[in-house]
Every structure is written in C-alpha cells, then in structure tokens.
Image (cartoon, rainbow, N blue to C red; front, side):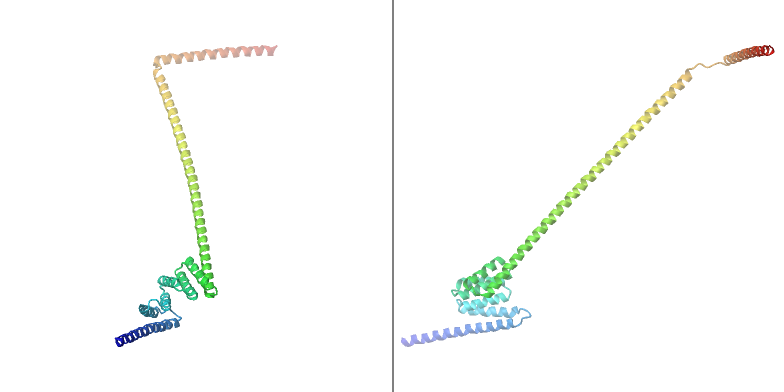
Length: 275
C-alpha cells in the first residue's frame, strides 16, 4: 500500500514537472517572438506579437493565476494595437496585484492603452494611480503631464472651434439681416415705382378723359352751330337783288352828300382867300 502511494506521488511530481516545463517552453518561445518583433524599429511586426500572444495564452491555460505571464499577454495585445483589450487586461492586473510596484506598472500600461484610444480623462486617472503606488516613477509623471497637455490643447481647440462657429453664425445672421434689409428696400422702391407708374397712368387716363370730354363738347358745339345755320332762312334771288340795289342807292346818296360837303368847304376857302 505504501509502495502504491509512493508511486502515485512520483507520477504526480513527474506530471507537475512536465507541465511546468511545457509552460516555460510556451513562455520562453513567446518571449523570444516578442523580443524579435521589438528589434525591428521600422514597423510593428504584429504577426510575431500575435504568435507571442497565442503562446502566452497557452501558458496561462496551464497556470491561470500567474500575473507575470498575464502582464506579458497585455503587452502583446498592446503591440498588436488591440488597445481596448489591453487596457482591460492591465486594469484587471492592477486590481489583482498586491505589490505596489507591479500595481503601478499595470496602471501605467493601462494609461498608455487608454491614451491610444484618445480617452484622455481615463488615461490621466490611470497615470495618477500609477504615481500613487510609485511616486518616483518618472515615466508615469512624464506621460501624465503629456496627457494633461493634450487635454488642454483639445479644450482650447474645441473652444476655438466653438468661437469660430459662433462668429460664422453671427456673420450669417448679419448677412441675412442685411439681405432682408436690402430686399425690403428693394420691395419698397419697387412699390414706390409701381405706385408712381399707377399715378402716372391714372393722370394719363384723367387727361385722356378730359380730352375726350373737351372733344365731345367741341363736337357738340359744332353740331349746334351747324343746326343753327341750317335753321336760318334762305334768301331768294329777287330779295338778294333788292338788297344789293338798296345798298348801291345808299352808296350813291352817301357819295352825293360827300360831294356837296366838299363843295361848300371849297367855296368858303375861296371867299376867305379873296378877302
């Protein structure tokens, strides 16, 4: 019975040792791929980082509570530009770690992942937590100052855009106001011209009516004159000859009187001269 138990312990120890060796193999190979990808500074080799991630996950399947391997997994996710999952992983590690230095490193990487997502407020808070656990961390201080500067620039840019939009709105309102003013003036002038033309037309019509009235009056007067002329009695030929003879007789009498008058004056002048 004791032999059996001893053998079982030996098998268990060998199994644990084999699993440990397999875990270390995954971690070692994953670290090698991670280091190789970091050496190429010209571009990010996401393929090798992805392979390293797979190996880290396999190691964690053997030992889920290993925070160091979990930390390496978070770094691989960050290098793959999977910032959302990386920030969640580092937040999880920050809560799980009890060592302040490890906690500070997790918050620092969490802040970097959040900054890459342009979540400035959340990244600032993560850097502050990193400094609360390790006040001497210069990288956390630098990134905190950088994140705060970006936030200030963003707020200034936002305010600048807001002021620009307000200026554009004011300009548009003034332009619309001036356009309405010009349109009202144009409508007023147009109405004035229309009224002027209407008055002119009315005066023209009135003059025309007056001319028509005057013409009608003249026509009526001419008609009346024609009627009066038509109503006058006609003189017969005999009466006309009589009237003409009477006029001639009157003319003769007048001439005779003139001759007598002249003769009397001549005789008077002669007597006076002889005397």
